[in-house]
Length: 132
Image 1 (cartoon, helix red, strand yellow):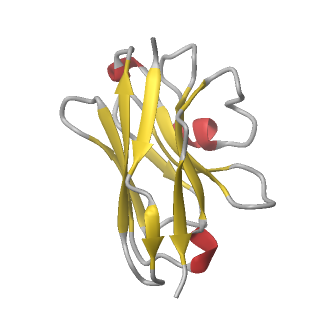
Image 2 (cartoon, one colour):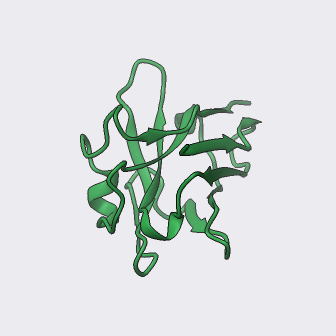
């Protein structure tokens, strides 16, 4: 059974940092591109950081580029999102997700609007609040 479990969310002051983790089980992550998405209250879900399977190429949305870093651990069972220089606009529930069909996916495509839907694999989300 495929399972994605996020952790590491919490409350932080502006300018602070957090590291989110996404623990994957039930599938071989080597063969799945995976990404981080977020949804703020009243806003659409947004793909912010995605990583490919083949060469670990990455994509970042303009809203997080230069501040966030996506990476995998050596065993490729966990994907991380290192977040720095956080601002209140980063407040959201953060999800990791991967496509059901697996295989290589260009990371900008994976993060793009509408590529993943509710039929794909999603974690339960971890909330991040950035406030002074």
